[in-house]
Length: 289
Image 1 (cartoon, rainbow, N blue to C red):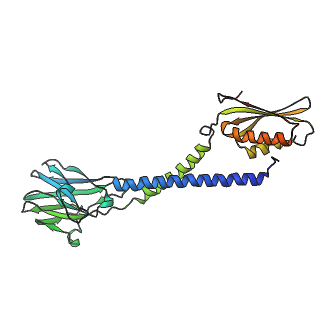
Image 2 (cartoon, one colour):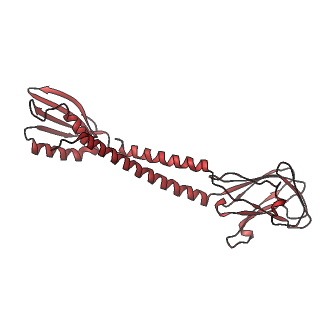
Image 3 (cartoon, rainbow, N blue to C red):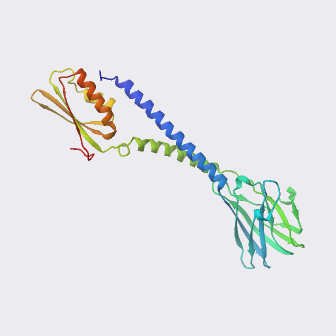
C-alpha cells in the first residue's frame, strides 16, 4: 500500500532535514575550527615601530626559544637610517610567544621609539605602552636612560654596544573575529545542505516523465493522490491532469535523484492495482519532453 500518513511523513522528512543540516553545520564548524587553529598557530605577526635616530644602526628583535633562552637564529633585524621613521619586522605567531627582547641599538647612542605595535590576523592588536614600563621592573641591560613620553613612546640612551630590554607580547584572540568565523561556519553548513539538496547537485534537471492513467470510479482516482506521491517523493512534480475517454491521466516530471525510488513505487502500484496504466519515460539528455 503506498498511501502514507502525510503528517508523519512530513514530520519524518523534517527531522531528517534537521539531522542532515545539523550534520553539515557540525562538519563546517569542525573544518572552520581546524582552519582557525592552524591560522593561530602558523600565522605570522608583524611588528611596526616608529623610530627617530640621528645615527645609523641596527634594531633587532629576539623571541624566546622553547628552551627559555634567546639566540641569533630566533631573531629579526632592520637597519636604521636617519630620516627614516617607520619600520616593519615579521615574527612568529603570537600563540607561541610571551615576550620579546628588543635590542634598539648596536652601539652607544640615543634613540626614540615613538610607537610600537604588534598585529596578527585573528588577534587583537598589541600596543606597547612604555609609560608604566619602569614600574613593571622589566628585564633590561646597558641603558643609561629610559624616559617614557606622554604618548606611550620612550627615548633610550645607551653607553655600551649591546643594550636591550624585554617587552611582553601576550596575544589575545579577537572574540569578534572568532564569532564571525563561527557564524560563517554555521552559514556554510546550512548552504552546503541546501546545495546538496538542490536539483542542480542532485541531478535536478528533469530526466523523465511518469504518466499514470486511472479509470474513472477507481478508488485510486482521488485529487489527493498527487499530493500523497509528492509526500513520498519530493522530487516528483505534477505537470498536468487531463481526462480522456473515461480515464483520468496524470503526468509527473521527476528529477534524476528520484528515478530509483520512483521505479520502486511503480512496481508496488502495479502489484496492488493491475488495472492502472503506468508509463515511465526516461530522457537521456536530462531535459523534459
